[in-house]
Length: 91
Image (cartoon, rainbow, N blue to C red):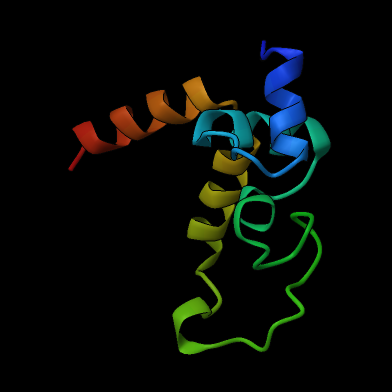
């Protein structure tokens, strides 16, 4: 990930927000979940349970879907796009 120092300064000053690709890479590098970094929802880390009460919208996923989501969240942005393209080709 290559971003300029002024860009990072603007992120830190909350003048602009990182785009999705940069947020994804930051999440991977920092070992935090993308959802938590982008929205503040869910657990900070993949193994940290959410402090929110479960709602119908966030019911527990079946084991296979949870496994896919865990793998997906660990991938860099380019590999995420490649995985999605591959999976979409099967539907």
